[in-house]
Image (cartoon, rainbow, N blue to C red; front, side):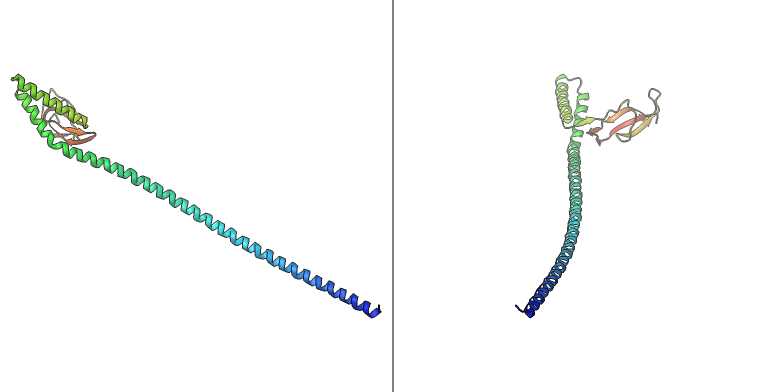
Length: 192
């Protein structure tokens, strides 16, 4: 082999080494660019995850509020139904109270006639039991302190036998359905 060929081969080897170094540098730059792209992509994905987590938190909050609103609505509806039912019962019972009053008056007037008196007593007892079963109770009045929430004063008297603001006479009994007054008692109040 000639010296020229040896030099040419050495030059070729040097060129191959330089090309390999250039390829390595290009490859390293490509890897760095790829890593930078991957980091950018990772940052984008992290941002998306954070946004999704915020959306999930918002949806959970909205869901919780919606459940609370529905629970309040359900409770309010139940309470309104109960109030409506009590009001309807009171409206139904009110006309019967005057019948009851007349039965009691008949009982008082018929005290001398045993059979009539006994029959009316049975009717009054039955009617009282029926009213009690549906929650209607008599408002205690005579001898009690006057309460404008339960009593309707139709007259006042000065009487030393009674204390201040004490009911001394009842003209018409009052009734409650549960805690609601469905008819005020008509009373005379002593020493107002």
